[in-house]
Image (cartoon, rainbow, N blue to C red; front, top):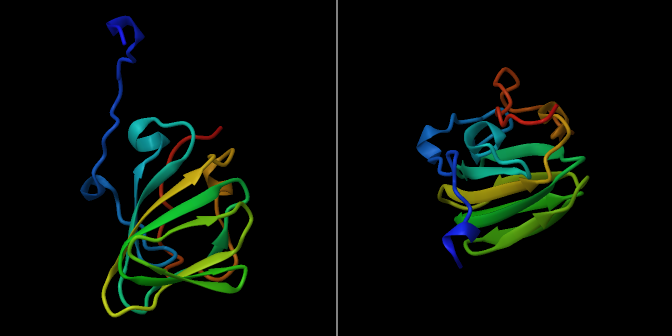
Length: 148
């Protein structure tokens, strides 16, 4: 590859979870690391999540995005339209567009995951539809940026 064929990176492309604001609205500790707001990406957003034993992320769905989850450590159970799926370290899961899902730490240690959603919703506020009350309704939604 010649130097003329290489893409020059002109924006931030690295963002640490330590820099991300913790979002706890739906449960767990969710940190959006790669998003239109943090690195200027245009096709989706992602980050990391931790759930202490017994904690859960309240049920919701994404009308525009698929969600990809990879379990780094711990034991989780994802409910997909009411059907339970057990997950352990090394497992990856696709949550299709429009499928209601709820994630619970069913293990005895804090679980850690990486997640990505794509494509982006037309506007950030259209990205999640809650189907049960948020655990912490006063907490803000993650600020991912992008959209119209």
